[in-house]
Length: 75
Image 1: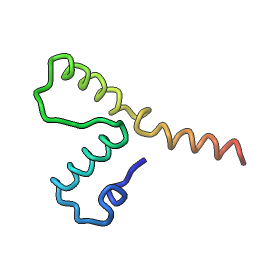
Image 2 (image 1 turned 180 degrees about the horizontal axis):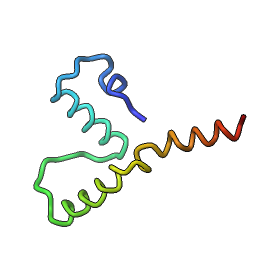
Image 3 (image 1 turned 45 degrees about the vertical axis):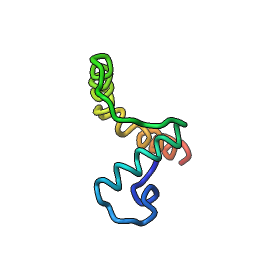
């Protein structure tokens, strides 16, 4: 997990700076160089399907739920 503070090294939260930090962070982590272009129809469809999945309660809270179950077992 990443926080804005970690990405920005304590710098201000100007939106363009945040976008640049995220772009660099993903590029470094994935070993890629991001570039501007127009999305294809297939990319738009994939983004829509993934956004539906990632908006679900199960996806958003899955790590919290796993941690809660683990802590309960340890007690």
